[in-house]
Amino acid sequence: NAGVMQNPRHLVRRRGQEARLRCSPMKGHSHVYWYRQLPEEGLKFMVYLQKENIIDESGMPKERFSAEFPKEGPSILRIQQVVRGDSAAYFCASSPSTVPGEQYFGPGTRLTVT
Amino acid sequence: TQLLEQSPQFLSIQEGENLTVYCNSSSVFSSLQWYRQEPGEGPVLLVTVVTGGEVKKLKRLTFQFGDARKDSSLHITAAQPGDTGLYLCAGVGLSNTGKLIFGQGTTLQVKP
Image (cartoon, rainbow over all chains, first blue to last red; front, side, top):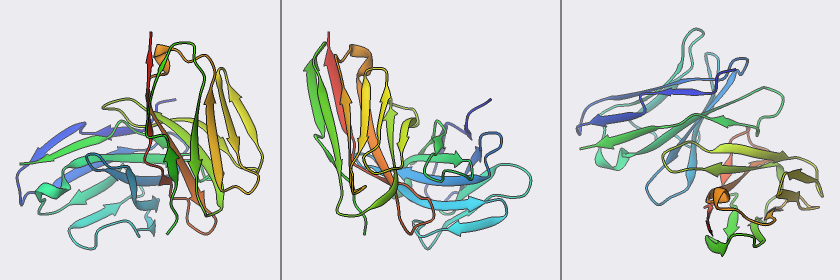
């Protein structure tokens, strides 16, 4: 059973460009969470999605950030007009519906904004 | 705002020693998870505890959930260099949607 897949692993963007991060959950998992880990800081929740629905986006910045989990295909975290402060590691996690806290993480995407 | 305080932040010990990492909060959690994270990788789930007072063992690692479900501990017996890494506790609040609230982490170094 393949684990959570994320791509790309590393992404370099210039200020003002768009960043698209992809996440494929574990087989059989219908819950996807995105977290951000800033340098020297802990992991912070961003958004929780189920297929075609955003369940909780309380950790998402109000502007420039969006997320989706379409019926087919991976979950996408999109950051428009990136700024240097967006440089961080972005992790996706998935869980089965029965135990919400039991989340399995992908390897992360390291975003660097130059 | 729910917070998880982890202590100690850094721990450097000799191979064979025992250690305990603590995770404390003033809030009640419906479940609590322990993860281990290597540099450049995502956190790897070690255990989930759900019931107050629950104790789970994973080889030389013992995890305990406090009776009131506000705190947890990770105890490692006879630490080995392979235990070196960042240990994270994370909890799910009673009324939230399943999002994890993370502690700041404990960086463990086990010297041979």
